[in-house]
Image 1 (cartoon, rainbow, N blue to C red):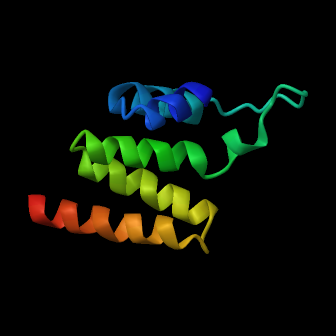
Image 2 (image 1 turned 180 degrees about the horizontal axis):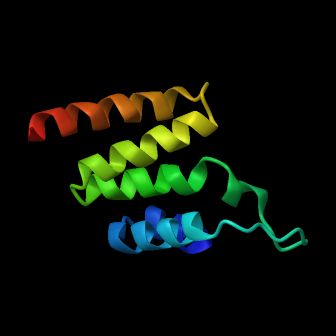
Length: 93
């Protein structure tokens, strides 16, 4: 997750996408002090969505944006991102 965050800050979208997807692929949460709770929330999907968008992978961005929004339904930024992603996907059709 830290690599995804740092890559986001550096606008290294390919690395951000890879790291976020790696984080998402981990489905078994170890209950120990090194398990960061934020890794199990909307942030990995949010970073996957943002990096996908910047890599022109708009369908992928939409999918992860929706996943992030489902985990944090009151987050207006996530809602706005999903609307943007929907428009980009619609334009591609």
